[in-house]
Image 1 (cartoon, rainbow, N blue to C red):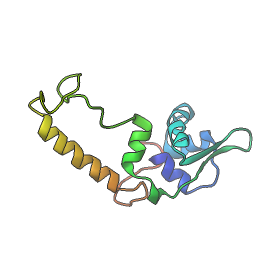
Image 2 (tube, one colour; image 1 turned 45 degrees about the vertical axis):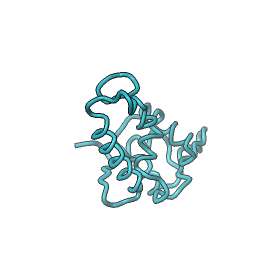
Image 3 (cartoon, helix red, strand yellow; image 1 turned 90 degrees about the vertical axis):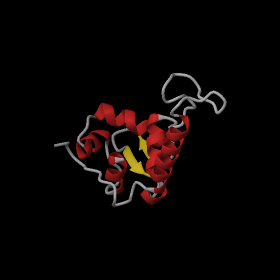
Image 4 (cartoon, helix red, strand yellow; image 1 turned 180 degrees about the vertical axis):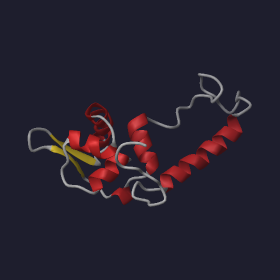
Length: 127
């Protein structure tokens, strides 16, 4: 999210400059930008005049979409207590409360855009 917010404030930005803006390393920026490029939110141009640029409005990208683009699906079908599927017929003791809590969290994250001022995204080195 920090990278997306930084790109919204700049034109095409080199990976090393973006890393400095968000207080990270160029290697990490490359890793995190690949899923954002794949999602179609960021353009990546190689070469001496290349860099990263934002292709979408941040209002159109939810926090949940960013999390899932970078980390993968949030709903895996696995039980919260064991490493196997938890189904309705043989569900664990936490199945129903976990499902309710997870559903609410996902709704909340989906309702907040990356541009939303209610989320705090700090640019630059972490203190």
